[in-house]
Image 1: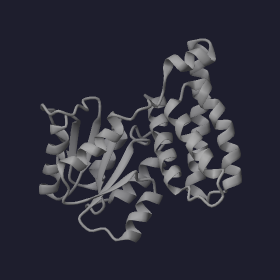
Image 2: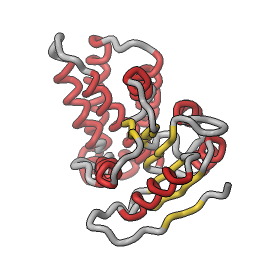
Image 3: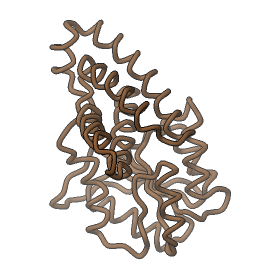
Image 4: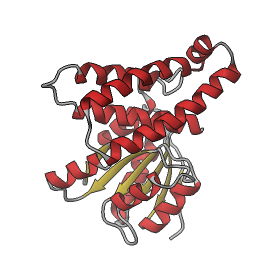
Length: 244
């Protein structure tokens, strides 16, 4: 099935800078999700199977991937895993949301641990889609602050060189967090170094979440899972901005 594009239309919320891939094999769900995102002024591309979703996400840099858990060819989990391991995929660092009509608590936890920012249970409402887009379009802190980066680094050439180093550091950190249990002491030491790098590069969003995660790690009894999820989202958003 060929991909279709839903044109933006007027709505009180504006997200015209957000590109969304909606992949769902159920025609009614796909239509609702695409039309809802379009009403919220997002740019939307749709498809009906996992193979096409993978091809689209490899070739185009989407901001948000809305992926059904069960589709012909590949489901949400397989799609995201393949994209994250493909260095050439343009949507490798896109924010990903899994969708399903049925969701056991254990399955939801597994999806979040696999890197999904959220799980959307269908049927959903327009306000749920607005909230998803709002988390992208209205985040109070941008991924990259060029002015802050220039002030810290001194000139554009140095800033870009430092951002190249930061990108490599973030790639390694992301792989480490995905492939091993979190060592709180080692992570705290790593965040101390990362905080300095973020400052020199103007990585404002990640810097904010780094500080929050450091504070959570400082309390031995505190559950760091919510902070770690926000940190991972900021890490993905920063990588996406560095690639842009």
